[in-house]
Amino acid sequence: KTKSNINTRAMISNDVVLILISIFFNVSIAFSNVPIRNKRCSVSPLSALTERQMQFWEDVEEGLNDIESLYKPKGMNIDRVRRFTKSASGEIPPPTGSQPFHQPCEEYIEGLTAKPFWSVTENLNLFPWAVDLEAQADIIATEFMAKLQSNQEEKNIFAGDSVWQNQVMGGGWSAVRLMRLGVWNAENCKEFPNTYEILRSLDIPFAVRGVCFARQEPGSGVKPHSDGRNFILTSHLGIQIPLEGCWIKVGGEKQNWKEGKLTTLDTSFEHSTSNSGDSERHVLIIDFWHPELSEAERVSLDFIYDLRNKFESGQVPVRKLRAPSLQKQEEGFGSLWNKLTGGS
Image 1 (cartoon, rainbow, N blue to C red):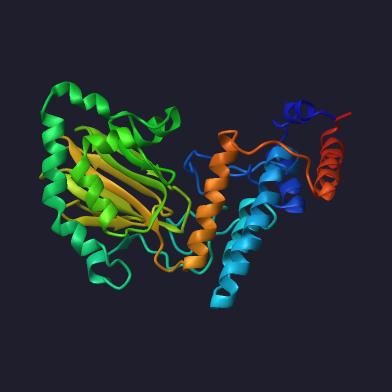
Image 2: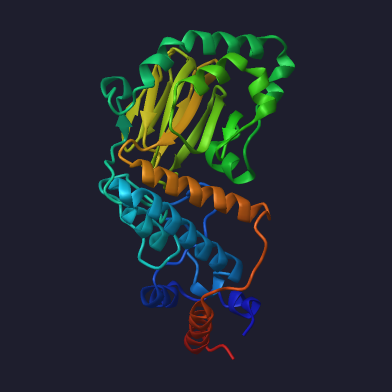
């Protein structure tokens, strides 16, 4: 049957869906740019995994083989990344949280320390760049505020990332992207040259989500949500913080930002913010790899997400699958779906 016929039956009872998922595991559509909305990434039946997505996972496997051959002689393995691909592609069940409010998704690296907040300046062996960044916070803040105040229209440089993100982050949240998906935004970086040079000089292990200045308007807040990926940590450098009524809550623990200081969190925990003050809140947000990832694991994850971006932008040509067994498995799932739902 066609995929459209299968999709028209997607409104069957949750009980039937759970039966199917328990048999064929939880299958996520090969990555999404959208952050995690609930306690899990959205899951779909295997029949929703298109040939294009299957091609993606085949290419991932080939690339990881090359990376593994490079790092194995150095005594490093990528076993955890291999299990990451099984979870992210739906081959094995998704993870469960390690504690209350912890909501990791299928894009998961096992064995990493999970806690809502991290003190980066007290763990210099894990975050050697943090002290130098705070020492230059005044330069970053001065440049940002001068740009913001030079003309009221400059606030137009802020832009929401997506319709969904506005729904979660709220209409009062917006950002100026300096880096996204590992690529510096040349136009925006020209507006903040000092900040750009400072960030480049500190050897920060930037992760795929990137760097941005983020604004929270007075009387607004970000709804509780989880970003899902447990292998990325996030630091907020306080630029302009209202004296009262401005906080961030992560995993049930609430903290206040401080100007010139880093607030560092694990966004795979449920988190939310509020600004009930009478002025805007501005922070510099930096996403970076979890410090317990090895070099080989970082390289592997970099490769996977870079490849995903190339797939989504059409840079990777379509080809035939090299594993016909995947097609047969898809056909078998569709047949069982029809039997359980009465499809013909």
